[in-house]
Length: 97
Image 1 (tube, rainbow, N blue to C red):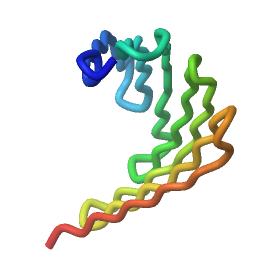
Image 2 (cartoon, rainbow, N blue to C red; image 1 turned 180 degrees about the vertical axis):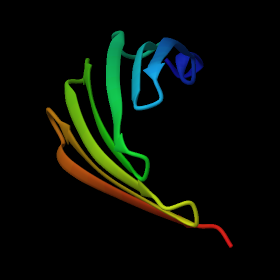
Image 3 (tube, rainbow, N blue to C red; image 1 turned 180 degrees about the horizontal axis):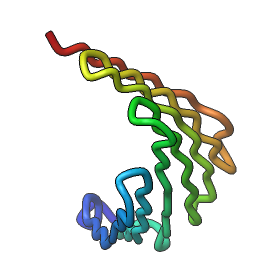
């Protein structure tokens, strides 16, 4: 139904027990689809490097990523594996002068 398009509810929480670790979880409900539960983790083994991973259900997906932040430049690379659509990639770069 056209009138139900765009109705979306997202409820989530995040936890950062240390500067090197972040954990996030949320539930997303679109009027046209079942509830999707998503979760992720970010680990900073060294200050300039971020390792990320996440997953979701409904639809089933797995995400992996890495970020490098030098203070002047930031580079983020990610890959997502959707159960139906397969693999997709993403890249972003930001330079501050």
